[in-house]
Amino acid sequence: MQLIQSCTMLVFLVLWLSTIKAPITKRVNAVLNDQRQITWLFPRRYVMVTFAAILIVVYTYKYGFVDTASYRSMYAAVRTYSWTDMRTNPNGVEVGWLLFLRLLNLISTDSKLMLFVGGSIIICGFLYTINRYSVDVSFSMIIFYFTMFLDLNNGMRQYVATAFIVLGFQFVIQRRFLPYLLMVIIASFCHNSAIFCLLFYFLANGKVFNKKIVISIGISLVFMIIPSLFTGILTIIFSGTNYSYYISAGSGMRVWRLLVSIVPSIMVLLISCRINHKDIAMTVSDSVFANLILINTIFCVLGLRSWIFVRMCFYTGLIVALFIPQLIKLLFREKDTRIVKVLAFTSYFIFFCYNLHVNNIYGNMHDFYLAW
Image (tube, rainbow, N blue to C red; front, side, top):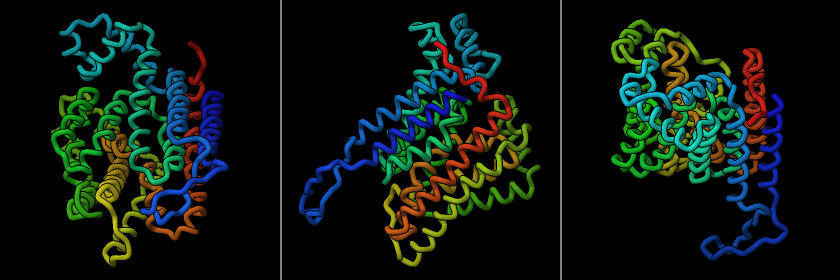
């Protein structure tokens, strides 16, 4: 517990420093009507690097958290595998992931190298996307920390796959299918479920709350009403795979996490109504992220029935942290945004504390320990 407490204090310190203004301001060009632009005391790139370094180090030290111990055992075992063993691995782990671990073993047999490299891919991929698309990077980073960071060690190879999918969202926005397909293929080498992320390209493109999203919501409602129908379909699809367990595992979505997802979706629907009345306009990237938030909520709702959809939330969960500053900016007046952000910060911090409490009950927090 001391490790995550220290990490949280450092994160707060770094993000607080990122809000300090420099004593000197500078003029901007005439395109911005010669307004005065704030110069921050600590440039964003330094804040991003420091924030990423803190999270990567803590990620590496969290090597007893939930199923991380299984990954460490896998890392030790893979160096004895032949190519035939990798292709017929009885644990059902993807060949691409096993090859990745085998290559790391050539550098060091210490499993903390796997945690360091895996954590670097995940955290840098997520923060790069936040830095590129968020309208308030510091706020998005703290929401990411509150909602996602604690669980990143749980399901490591899927989060590595998620990092590639998240990096591929830029190609969804640019409507470049082949580069996005390449990112999905790379991700699927780590976790086969990533192949379903191809649907994001077709569902997320288009207007906010488009017909494709409406149809998806309709299908999910049918699933909630008649779960046995879709359970049978999912059983056929995943029969004989290592993911068939998740279909029979039942619900895995907690109500609190569902609420965290639903609130941004309500904001998206309100924005959609305002767009129809021509009160506001959205960019292509805004529309893609808004639709991805709706898809994330669909996965969360379906997760009340089947664990397989909880796993799909991995691929869309970051969008909440990335896009919520823009949702606040679009929905509220400028003078009200600070109050709304304080309320959002407080709410997400409560969720973070609740998540710590739940993990502590299950004994997961006792496995955070400092050792090298």
